[in-house]
Length: 272
Image (cartoon, rainbow, N blue to C red; front, side, top):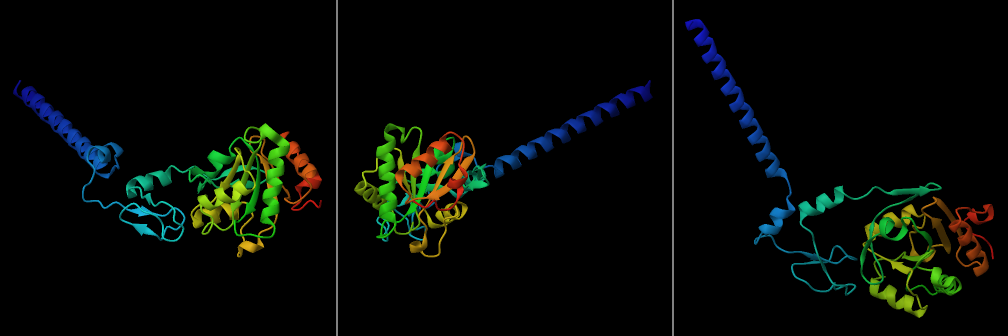
């Protein structure tokens, strides 16, 4: 009887020790997770009074300030820098580059449109759309004005299809100069309307984009008058000559919209 009682007591003590150990381990794990987690709610409820605010130019990241203002180089409004932990989390949530067909891989880099809106290039401008893309810079006096005039003709020829069935995108090859304000003023000369987006941004991001699209050049004046036409939903992409006759370009666009490309339009330049 004594032996049985002793065994029961020993069993009870052992059980209590196991429960205590398990509870301590769980508490320690939860405390560790709470200490390492970047909680947005915690930041919102208890903002740090000591953390200095920082503002940076979206075009010239080297231009920084501790208070709101304008960039000394391009006169754009400085934007508040996100907290490091939140920025790190945002980076981990960035979607992977999109492989859209014909081996075209488009990075979802952050860009600015002519109204200063921050956009993700693939997600906001390309995904599930048919697009025509050309490359320009606002100080250009040679091929860029004719390229813009071609887009202006497309805008007139295709009417209300622009912005619905077809989206025009002009990408700056000189993002250090071409602020959204400059692009908007330049586009106004060609009566750019809804459905025609001008794109610029921080140079490193724009370099990634231009490299992916095969439009990177060491000198801005060296960029070619190529036009990229793509139908993301059907995975059909081609390049054509951006200064060709408007009838040729609209023919290529209509084929791409239908999900097909003629062999003659798949070359870098289609002679007018």
